[in-house]
Each structure stands twice: as C-alpha cells, then as structure tokens.
Image (cartoon, rainbow, N blue to C red; front, top):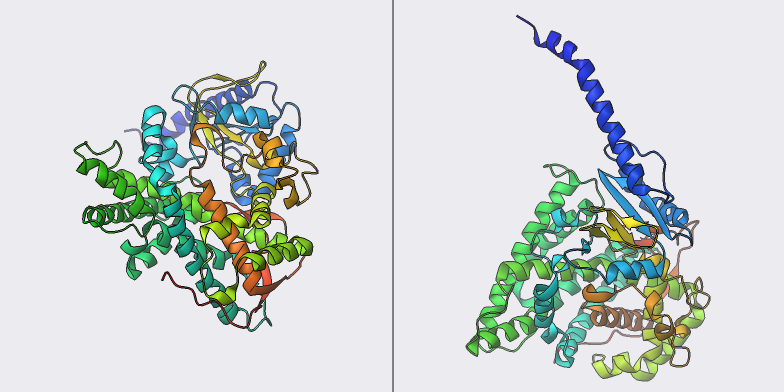
Length: 503
C-alpha cells in the first residue's frame, strides 16, 4: 500500500508546478489589463497589495493618486484577486458617474460592497427600479419634512454639546478627543431623524454595537468567516437591516391609523399608505425588508460622512479665526440662544456664510474620498485605454475637489459666495455628493446638519485645538478624519444653554 506521505511526495512537483503556473498567469493577467498605465510592475500573489491598503490606507491612496499624476490621470493596482483602477482626472470620473447602468459601471460603495451591504440596496439598482425608489423618496425632502428633521437634529446636537462640555472637558482644563463623541452624536441623530419613535433603548444599544462591528469590518480584509472582522460586519449589517425593516412595518401601521409623521420613515410610509388607500397596488420595492436595506444605505451615508465633516469643521474653524468670527457674527444676527427657540428652516436659509463654510468643509475634505464602481463590461474610458470587465474603478472625489477651483489648496468659504459662485463655475469638480443618476439624495439634509452643528457648536462653546505633529494628517475610519481625532479644549461660551423643545 502506498502511504499518503509517499503519494503527496510524488504529487508535490505537479502541485508546485500548477501553483507556479497559476501565479504566472495571475501576473500576466494583471499586466495585460494594466497595459501602459502607471502602477506596480509586480503585485504580491493572491492578495495583491491588500495588506498595504489595510495597514495604511492613507499612504496607499496617496501613492495611487501620485502615480496617476495629471496625465493620464489613471493608475492600476491589484487587490485580493481584483484588478483596480484609480481615477484622478475629473472628466474621467464623470465618465464613470454618468454611465451607471447594467452594461457599463455598477456602483458598489465599497471594494466588496455587494457582499458586505446585502442585496436590498439602492446603490445596486438601475433604470426604472432605481428611478421608482428615488421617486418614493420625494416626500422625505419636502419643506415640512425638513422642518421636522432640523428640530430633531438641534435637540440631539444640544444634548451632546452639553454632555461634552459638562462631562468630558473638566471645565476646559483637559482635552477632549471628539472623534468617537461626534460618531455617537451622529448615530443618535440618524436613529432619531430616520426611525426615532420605533427604536427603544435596548434596540438603540444593540444598533450601536452592530454599527461599530460594521465600521471595523469595512476596513478589514474580506474574510467572511466567524471571528473575522469582515464576516462579523456582514452579519451585523443583516441584523441592522432587519431592525430597520421592523421600524418600517411599525411606521406603516401608525401612518395607516392617520397619525402625523414624526421622522423620515413616517413621511416615506405615509406616501406608500396613501397610494395603497387610493386603490393602487403598493409601489415597487416598498416591502419592509427592502425598505430596511434602503434605510441602511441612508444610515451608512449619513453616519460616517457627517462624522467626518463635523470633525473637519471643528479643526478648520480653529485654524481659521477670521472664518470663526464671521460665523459667530452671522449666527448671532439671525438666532439668539437666549430666545430658547429652535433655529427655523427659514433662519437656516439666512445663514448664507455659514452654509458657504459647510460647503467649503465638504470640498476641502470630502468625507468619502472615492466612490468604488465595478465595470460590468469592457468600457472605453479614453481613446487609448479600455477598462476591462470586472475591474474595480475608484473615481477620486478628493482629487477632483482640488482641480479647477481658485487656489484649491486654501480653505476659502468665500469661493461659494454670491459674487464668486465657484460652486457653479466649477460645478463639475464638486463631486462630494456624486454625480449622475446615483447622486446623493440626502445632500440637502447632510448640509443642513453640518450648518446646524457649526452654528450651535461655535455659538455655545469656546474651543481650542490641541496642536501636535501631524494632527491634521488624514486617516481613514472609514471616511477621513484628522489623525488626532480632533482633540480640543472645550468650555461653555454662554451663561446658560438654550432650553429647546419641540413645543
């Protein structure tokens, strides 16, 4: 009888040859797809440069951008068996954003997004299905809806600002790291605005734990096994979507009973209930499970992007005292904290300079620096280069934000003023909210949230950044953040905080 050891020994040369052939074919496939584009000539087998990406995302993407250069504005690499293409040039990014369709590019939101986010996701939809769901969302963004949201946002913001100053700052004598505090603020804001009445304390605590698991997994290698961060994140997303689906069902029942909307899901479900009550069939993709998946999209977009923008707003206001002075003057002219009244939607619209500051924060430090897509078919991106089918393409929103604008490397809110109007002149370069059919539906909500935070934070608190070497360097977590987590000294600026309520 031949022993297993002997059999393995006899097969070993063939196994080694097959493995070497596979690795050779992998390298050849990469080089054929790369053609004459800049990028590494050799990539580590199987995992490519994924370890470098996970270990230091900032350096990895800076290198991709630098390699792409101004011409051709493209660079290649290889990640976990997938050929990737980084796009630095704005006009080439537009080619991707404008061609999201079944036979061109598919928006994936993450290099392994379809697996991570699940099936019921607005970002994976096309054509009439996609248009139908976006039409359903229209009631979420009416003046009445925005009035409801801004009131809820202010209550959450005020509650957290008070807690930061009273509980964590030691009366302005010890520094506060804002990153996790801002993340908690935004998570509570999203929960309250999107599905507020339908999450009890236990559900909120569970929600927080699952969302933290999702955050960790989104930055990890895509190993979908128990005990690995990516696998835990995927299961957390499933639980989050299921929780949100239950909220959708509860909201439908409440709206069917004729109650007034009190959060985003209510405005959405009210329109669906009205459609059914008029004798029509339910709109496509309006089942609780699908809506739960769509709501997770909103949560993902609102949570991490807003965390990034709020942190950079604090960091940039601290570094630009004249900008901070002008914000405080404008807010004080329009809203008094001593009035114990909420900032109204009309007052928010009057804060033109503060809104310019918010827009410049988003331009200067776009939260999601890239928007991954996958090529469903070969796509001729330029006259000399066709993107191979299956390529993960990364249009760089960050690089576009520094193209075209006047002195783009300078933080300058006045570029969005009524006189300069650089948001119109260089509109094609302002890609922080995307472009084309999948442009962010919640951009007005996101900007309102940032304006409200800037107005209240700067009016109610004094703050001073704790400066350290490299504190303003960019880190990915998963959207971009200051390296030091935005560490500041906080103290109360007013005699008493406003006494705000919904009444």
